Length: 234
Image 1 (cartoon, rainbow, N blue to C red):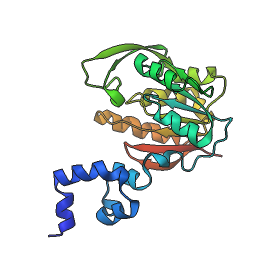
Image 2: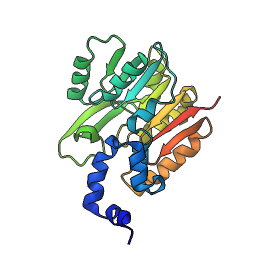
Image 3: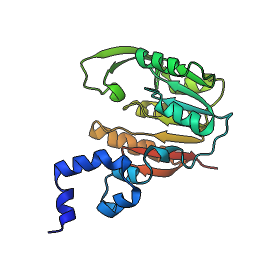
Image 4: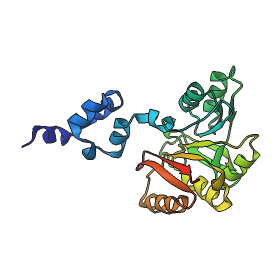
């Protein structure tokens, strides 16, 4: 029996390898597992992990990136450090929003909006679960937050974003449907989307959204249920 295959089928070994993935040299990763045998998250790691998200995007210091799901500000810092561009971070959880403001209080090119986004102006109940905080979180600790229609938010901004990074734990479905229905989607140059899978209904929702996106955008890369990039067609 192939020794490598035995290792890959061993749960403990695979769990250990998964923790090392972001830090493993790409050549070693491919040699050990073979690209086609990798899961989507493992393939994403092989291609550069989160560095891939900005690797083929051209921004200048005057452009705006909208980060949906500011959390601890890692993405905000990434965009600021790499392009020196303006960043608006949307973060509905008060403690996270406060922390973001404190971390970037000396940076005039970072703005924090404290609300959630969806397909309507309303309120949402979110489960507090760290980076997995959202409507689908199983946490018993819940908080009710203001939610804004994403299409309205975009049109109210002082500057229209060139890039939207969307990692909002299931909230992407309602947001994308709003952008599609309002036709605001046509103005967005680049969408970075992390679709989340909670039920089989999410598979159908993702498929429908992707078909609709193809009318105005082209898929640059896709790692299912990890990250995908869509650029507006010229």
